[in-house]
Image 1 (cartoon, helix red, strand yellow):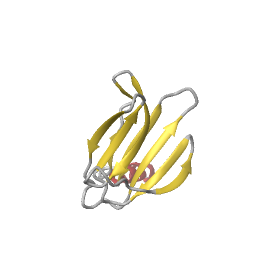
Image 2 (image 1 turned 90 degrees about the vertical axis):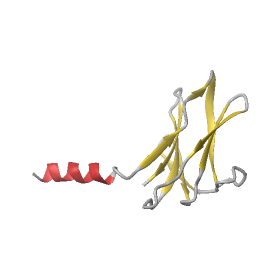
Image 3 (image 1 turned 90 degrees about the horizontal axis):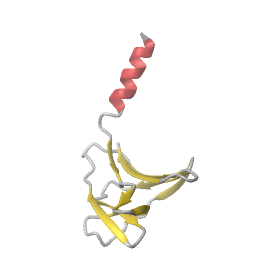
Image 4 (image 1 turned 135 degrees about the vertical axis):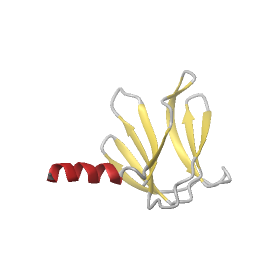
Length: 109
């Protein structure tokens, strides 16, 4: 019974989460980096850096509006994003395993 309740609790806590991910490739170009921007696509949001296993995370303010995914060959793909009104935190998580592709996700919960 306790195990079932814990599973339900963890499942319910993730229901309000939002995630936006940069595709691993744009055409044949590999993902290189990503930045978050306010709604004007000019002002980059600076976040608090936290080291994490196989990468890092940037804690962002809740007024993030765009995720700009950068690829080799100077390609940038803009993804619009609006955090839900009940969001309490947003982060960009960057992960890269040795020899594996880079993963970049914007996550608000």
